[in-house]
Length: 216
Length: 234
Image 1 (cartoon, rainbow over the protein chains, first blue to last red):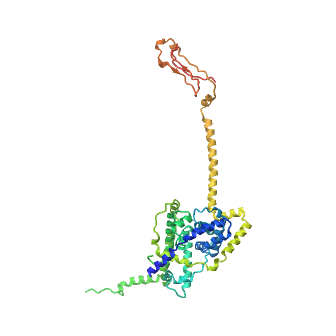
Image 2: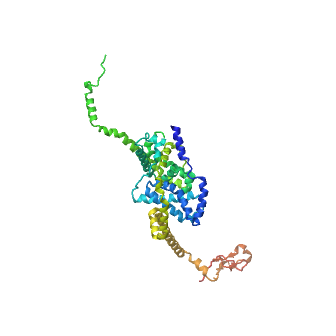
């Protein structure tokens, strides 16, 4: 059982966030988009919309906000495409825009109204995941409810973190980016990323105590 | 052989009554049942609050900003939490949810190109998004303005003070024309023989400033000067 869990965790976490071959394609697409080829930019949008939306959703825990901010991200990218020098990959650049847009939004939302959480769809395959089974006492008719409840608890706990801490947890533990990539995206050092990750996890460990084993 | 005391013995009556009173003071059973759960919940909340305080302390943030964040344990310290968080990957919108994303994006881009956002509106948005940054810039401008005014006033006052307290002769001498030097001779020593006159009698009449034509009173004069003074006739 334990080995299955470890394998499962490694499978999830070690997935490379960006296929190596896509980097070269991105550069060509960016060049074409700069030359007013609208199809090239559409291709970039199609390529990254899911990841950008996912990152923003995990940061905001709200459908509408995530959709709106993802569009805002691509609009800003389109308008500033001429400023993209190619020093970093397009992938890092678009992530940085998404992260800045989202953090600005979160700062303004914190002052405006109480956050309204809306749950995304939970994939039915979660019911076969050994980690899920272990934490919800097995699959069954009530497992869908248990899955939704678990996701709500995870989202609530994540929303209690500061935006900076939530960002590193989202990018590292959920999206599977490396420390170096996160450091580039957040324009900080790897040490800072590791430090934020550690303190964010300490908080989450306390907030999600009931889902974790005693010595986990 | 002494008899072993029993709980119901009369000598324990008072104690039994006290215990009965204490039992009556006990809270209802459900309260006690929930006590442990409440205790753990509050303990977890307080521990989470402590962790949040540590994570958001200004000292840690300063060290992170300066790039000297403390060394911390890595992934190996949180295996269970990482597996739990990895379940979030199952939470995503249905495939159809983002189908129209590109169409909506193009429509919005077109609308923005046709009706560009006014400068005032963009400023308002920026203020809404980053009021703290704007406040910092505002405070910085205000401080710079106040410091500029203060330093200007200081130098003004300092210049006035220097002018008021400057030694007048220096200023006047700088602008003065050539002044005559008056040597006062001691009549009592006027008859000193020439042989007694020594080199020490060479007298330098002080001059003010760096006048090019410095006046010397040389030795080998007929009378040795004893005292001298310079006076200026303006």
